[in-house]
Length: 270
Image (cartoon, rainbow, N blue to C red; front, side, top):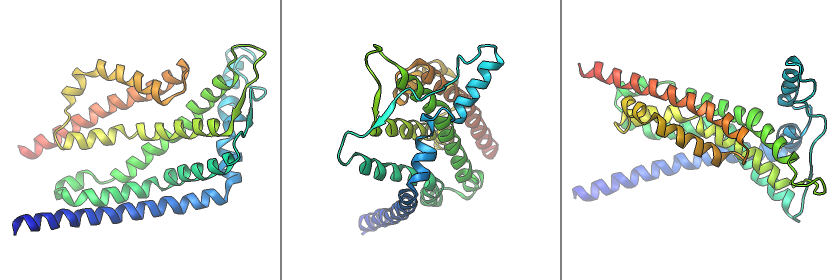
């Protein structure tokens, strides 16, 4: 009888989790449909922005170049490549995939809130109070990561890879799918990576991590950071270094967060 009750309890939890997933998927699809309808804004103004010489990142680099007396060394005057579609359904499939990406990014605060609603009942009241604002901070970190990827990593990667030539006789004609995939993947990956402090907070709460452990293995973490940067960025050293810096900062911030959690737990025990 007890086993049956435990099984029913487990199934009840699965049912609740399923509805959280359904509501999250519904929110993503809602914003995906909006992104699909307003494709001019999503593509012309946002996703294809890093291709234009007037993109804010390129203008900022040009200003820095002139300030340092390098003239127009860092300025981008013309697009180094042209976009092309080589598949019959290429533009349509890219439109759908990109809309889903956009839907997830916009709906992320709600998706995380649904996940938090599922997890929070398992916490004690004191733990729930300590975790107040977790949805807000996770959303802010995710947004900062996406913006960092879009305004820093994506344009530099696009400019480097789009202008790189093994020979002047080979022109760069980049497929639409490849270009959009680079911009969206880099932006989304950075958004997820910026969630590291939130992950460390919960791992510390359940006893999987300690600040001492993170300090001891700091050097190993730096190596993992470089490897992770190489995976999520295009194969150029500049992008990898740019991603590594915020990761290192986030790691150090996570150590402080972990130490704060341990300190609070020790106060509670005392």
